[in-house]
Length: 467
Image (cartoon, rainbow, N blue to C red):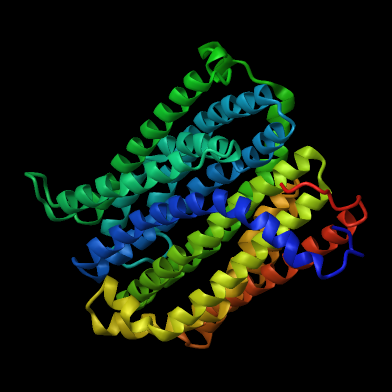
């Protein structure tokens, strides 16, 4: 709808978009929650060991994701490529994008594995306590084996989501949690005749779960292609060796800024966790638990962001400017409502949330304070991730990259470190600094989207049909 559209049309436009958005978003959100549940289970399981084990999982897991998320971020370009191809009814182009993604993932896995191998000894130079480091490094090494299955799974997931096939993704991730729980129970504590590996056991449990998810999604993709004769299987193994330079350039153009942006965002929390590793184990454990709790909530706007990127991309592929605006604003509204509610929950029951993960009272007390800080920035955290997906749907991945670089690395993290160590505010100071960075990103990206909407509003009249 144009900028001159009567305000009365907005509720009607949102009602028209909401069912389509939710049909796509709900399974994606459930998949994201299932994904995050694995990390939460790891934290809860090792939380029954001691605070050192929690810290080890925090350090090792954060370092892994800080590296792996670059590869996953690069593959976000598939949202745009596949959705645009589907919107233009060009399945051949969508299939080629998937095959290209699998090739790129294989190369990325090899390169990123080297970085993870270098990260382990580098942790000793950061000043992390020896007891935590002794368990964090084996955990990180176990996670490293799961990198290739993770990237291949990501390719298949982005392809299927852009095709509108979201239920298989949800089922594969949620069912993988059962494998993770059993493997955690066996490998962390030494059941079923297996050795008690502590934090390292949680890493191997994650590896087993990711191999299962990849296998499940690969089987579905092949069966669907065969049943519906989509043409995907017509390419043959030889297609994997044929690299379309034009599509590769487009994937890199879209995916590289997204990869850098995602790495910057995850990396700032990785850096914060590394800094927290210099504090007492109680502060580090509280940081990890509070971060795990809000990360679980964050999966909802993250899933909504993926769905919004697809909905916006489909509309853009059709050349439908009105559909682009309608999908973007509807996603932002849904995300804002949910995150406001989650902020209230964090205010009402922070003690209960902490006690899910640990029984150590000092950790609970510190964590409650952190959750109250998190309650303040929930709206902004959700907004920034949803608007990132919306912008990705129209092919803009650079704005989020630049905004994250400046807000997180030049404002939030330095301010947090200063408050934590120089001002003596401990872990609370670190979180306050990170909060300011998140708020800044949300404000900037929303302003950019608003300007894009003003430009799109002149593109044409409201289409008469419902999308």
